Length: 242
Image (tube, rainbow, N blue to C red; front, side, top):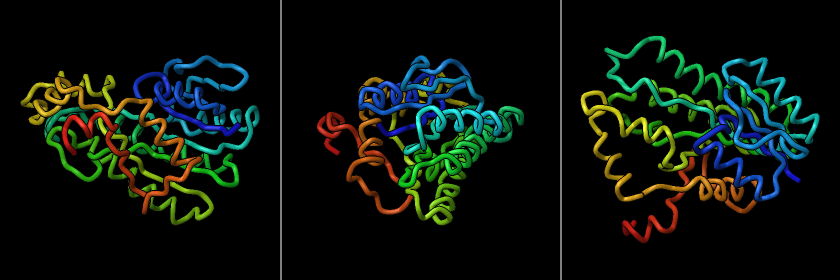
């Protein structure tokens, strides 16, 4: 049984990945600031871990490897969106928290993964279209995801024995999306675009994203380069003609 680790596995995409990976027969290491979506058990190491704490991440990774075996797939999924404010008005402490979680959390997870990985291992750092497209009000988020993508490119150069990817999962209807839709237009001018997407139901499901990641790690999917956007779920293609 392959071993997969998911950070930020308490809700949203992380919880969906945990459930789908378990159904696919993977052994799991799950961590989150709050309780992970699945309980601790024979094939699951579930722990409350703050990814901004490098020591805590390392202890978690060591426990996963000790109990379940070397780690085959590590998904750095933990992340935050806010603050959603123009740069001039954004709370510096909130910006710092964003960068701590979204960038340093990925760095800490990657370092621990490299210490406890299997021979043919795969690293997935969850990215976003915001890494390459600027959104007013998303200064911290855009900057953090751009940093994640370049960081992943460096890891791919330094670690030729693994496959490292920065993966944009598409739009998944999580609490993060609800936060976006609740943001006033003056703080996020593109909010109507996300409200329309909710009305259309134009989302990728966590189960769809999980299937793509399993295929990426253990199947025949081999994207060109480090950056990869998960394709839209089939029903979305039919609905929107894309």
